[in-house]
Length: 116
Length: 113
Image 1: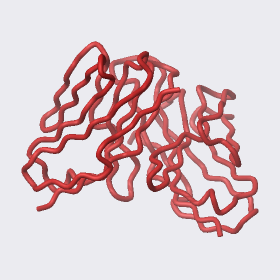
Image 2 (image 1 turned 135 degrees about the vertical axis):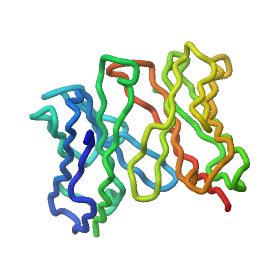
Image 3 (image 1 turned 45 degrees about the vertical axis):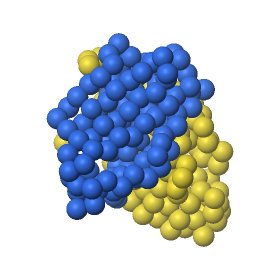
Image 4 (image 1 turned 180 degrees about the vertical axis):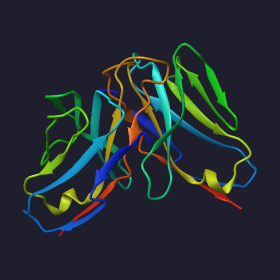
């Protein structure tokens, strides 16, 4: 089944304790992206990656890091989480060329993060 | 960059009635406009999209219309059903390949049985 998976789905942590949220897709997509979703603010892009070893900042990158060492994986790293990073996080992927629906962006199921 | 706005933020409709959500965008170079549906506890999922070379597209009970002159596009849901209750996001981008999607803030649609 074509899908984007994220782990963990739920995480409660404390301020300053480094954490990583993993994201993996099995569709051989070039483009991958991380969003955070907050009430009243919609989906805001954190970082995105056009392909392996190519990453760039989105709209709200402060406090986050990413890496893209393999095409299928795009982990989100919070080196020193703070309470204002409490949010619902989504990973997404899509192709960047090809047929009629290649712009379709596929989202993972989300990771709900609480930073105390 | 692109700025996408959605109205209204919450919409309640009686089952069987129609629902319309409107989005406006700022970048006149945008030419791809998808709509995503997010059900409770899930990630957003594409339900319909439209490109700037057409003015309307339909898929069963849902349709999207685009007015490039006024820079707005709308989602129309006819004969609403309880399973249409969800958050709907519109988005816009300059087109294909590497261009980023700019999302609106989302609309909560509630279908009242």
